[in-house]
Amino acid sequence: MRTDIKICGLKTEAAVKSAVAGGASHIGFIFFPKSPRNIEPADAAALADPVRGKVRIVAVTVDADNDLLDEIVDQLHPDILQLHGRESPERVLNVKAVYGLPVMKALSIREAADLKTIEPYIGIADRFLLDAKPPAGSDLPGGNGVAFDWTLLGALDDGVDYMLSGGLNKDNVGEALAITDAPGVDVSSGVESAPGVKDVAMIEAFFDATRLATRQTAAAGRNT
Image: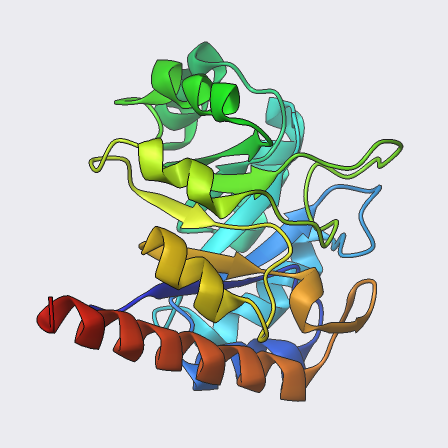
């Protein structure tokens, strides 16, 4: 089984090319001024246009109003809108109705009780991104380089389609997949040499580690 891989927070042509060449299923552009990965819609469009059709383009926003979403959709023409704030199920439905695009809803996990936050969005969000809750004092809902206890996802309904996020890198993605068998993984800070600065070698290493883990998980399944 192929694991979806999303490289998020891209800002340069080199990073986009590396993500696509490595076989990313998704690339993400972040539209949130507090983030070191923030990018203007026109700049994101210039990076995305050459690879359109080769990879799914994700626009990541945090409690964005329709004015910002209008600008992003008009300029970037994303395949997916990722809502990474406190958007309610009603807001997700509204966004889907207005823009006619699938929505990936990000939710923060720290303890078992947090899995209950998924339930109101089931049948509304097209996919989930399960991220670690931000550390105290952080202004960023994601991209903080922290992980959560992946064993918690053992209680997740098998029908929930999600990407695993939060603190992933080449050294731990294998363990994360062995524990969760997640359908997809999302990485941002784990392939950066500095906040917001993607490192091509780190992106390539992440792909290698993810593919190895996927093969090992598949082999283990065949041998049980």
